[in-house]
Length: 443
Image (cartoon, rainbow, N blue to C red; front, side, top):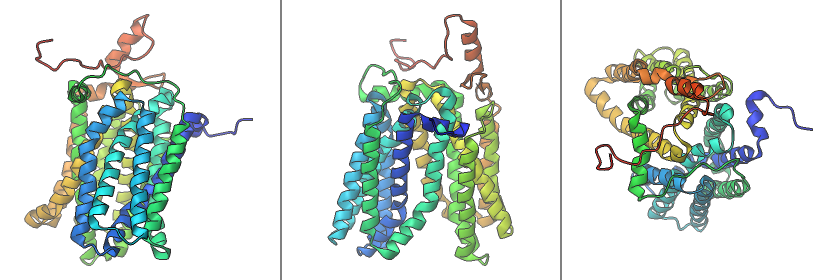
């Protein structure tokens, strides 16, 4: 007898998806230990703050550089195989690092090498894990499937640092890192048992850069969608000012670390609430709704400028984080249905790359800009930078044309209407994969 489940969790009845969700959940728990653990492992091994910064920079740069490569190979090969290879590499990297820590022979360069390679492997995992979801569930279940994965990530990011602190208090950094290595072994085992409902059609293999060009050109052909990605990149750049300048404001006579901890906890709770909301809420115009909701990101920055009372700031942060989590799943689901399955990973890698570049750039710019313009002016300018571009996006006809149709799928209104009138059409037409660059002799 099947176990009764709420409709929002019905995707878990699908064994392939259930295996993916279980694998992602286990590895996410292990990976959530790493940001805190690696920092203290370096410091306890005799490293300096400069060493910590170097290792974290190497990890971030390696991930950004390899994202386009991961996107191409996740579209060329079986995405299941890419996920397994990524899990295996990360298990080896973190396993080696744990052994070196247990033997008390971990040098800073070894942290940098292993952590950077693990970040590169994650750059393959990230686009493949998003692109594989449409191969596991039907289009009507895409948003709940994405929301469950996102909810797991949000929850582990809340619990991970606390669990890492507990492990560091009762054991050593090597223990936490070993747990992460084991989590990737378990994830590898679960993904290996995953049978895809259908394999995405693969385009003919070309030169690497030709494949990369085709994927990114498919985005560039829809300029309004590229503008959408870039505006959310600006959003990520601006919100980084909140994370850098917020603690400074709190430290200047407004409760210090305690107040900042309260703000971060309410934001984390908001992320979980937003993930739960994404299981149910499916807007008719997904891009218009997502871009309009971006205005809520103004709250955390604008409320710091006076600054407002702590409970008001915490409430504004909670609302903004609810929006961020909800909108993230709406945008992911929209992306999965606007582009052909054979280029999904390349499109996803471009999306992730913009975000991963934008936020560190914001972290780096926040303090110098605040020194030049002043704290209040900088916070208000960043708030304006968050709200204005995404609102202006909704003036673009292409953005407004993206709709959710009666059958639950998402597409472009004109294309859907044309398909509906055609007796041969059975689904919303997808954007063709470009085979020639504009202006080439072939055209």
